[in-house]
Length: 601
Image (tube, rainbow, N blue to C red; front, side, top):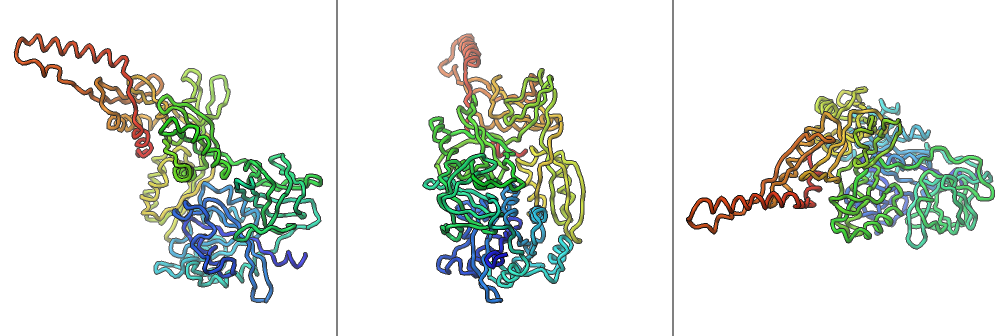
């Protein structure tokens, strides 16, 4: 092994949301002198305004630091920062693949949480050296000893060896850097082997095209070489390569063990898929790096412009967003109620919120989103299986045999006193209990099989309120199962409103139908005729309410005289209202669609 490679350390930081991962990255950059003190700001690696406001990492980042250790030698430290939210698990797994070590950050006040364990298992699957760290030990509510014992029971690291730091003040961070040098193994691989480079992230630059962030496992990558992207099955020329410091620093070559970037006039970010392997076009590697998979959206929603004239602007905005976020998928769809729009696929509910926010901020678009739903497997009477993302594509009842819905394996960690409330919540959401284990005397882990459709709406909010904010939640997709599902339609004056259709479990259809009709009654403006609002399963109406007609006083002009005069006017009005009801068109206001989104499930 060359001296150069023996002084490289590739590592990442894994943690639950808000346990101080980005703050620790800031301190590492400051102590190693990578960022000058005058340029220092909070969340240096979080470049998006949304990341700063929400205090979360949405896109993974990488940066190279140089550190002079206690032995007097200079070491190259490649920090690959990762997202912490469950929606971005695939990005985390690919970033971990590019490392040899992981710093496991645990909040000394809050203790171990669900995504701490989830990301730890991902790191162990990648066979990384784990360095456990207790952060926020300077807080008055810190329970360093208790949490250290929890870490010991989780990974076997002696409690007295767990490092205690404060990423905010910098206490203990110098010792952490020395521990990284000592414990994280240097990278392996031979510079003369056929090239194998893993893409662990990619971004889009409107002047340079798609830029791939890579970790070289085998071989040497030089500038101006022809490269093959093995999964994307395309070839490009490496116009520029380099290392990632605060900016991009061009170099002539990257060898086995290095982390850097590749620019090759790649016009589509989908050609630089996370997890793909880059090799030489003229001397390709025999195999690609294992673990690549297509990122598949899990949650789908209709996105429509509030002003129909903005349809083309919405299409252009989604195209530009997809350049930076290849996980977004969309296709055009039409709604009788909302006009032209798109059915957009997201990784999860947080991902959906972020995309909506970016459409509003970056492109100044006013949009309406329909009720989020998931993918279903529909089995017809002929035995054909269709995957549907839109409730309106469910076949007619006569052709439908059954519907399968996606289930997830959910892991919830909570203080023991809230376990009863959480179990009731999971049962209400059709959850199947799997296992319960205790992490010490105060915290417990619950495992449930839950339908994905039951958790994408407001499950996380309810979980937080039932546990006073202390419970944490993580899930993995576990497969499709047959369920007693029905399509719930909303009809206004007998006409179905396609944008309000939903696929629900039969046991919840009646309750949801009543809530939908009651909500719409308060939102649809009164007409000159009575408006019937109905919820129906197929041809069977399960809930109904009416919006009363506005009654014009046609008898106001009658002063005295025979009663027959008034009766004649009232009969004439009655006939007119009947005729109006037949030809009258009820407009559903935008507030109705927005209110249904906020309706308690």
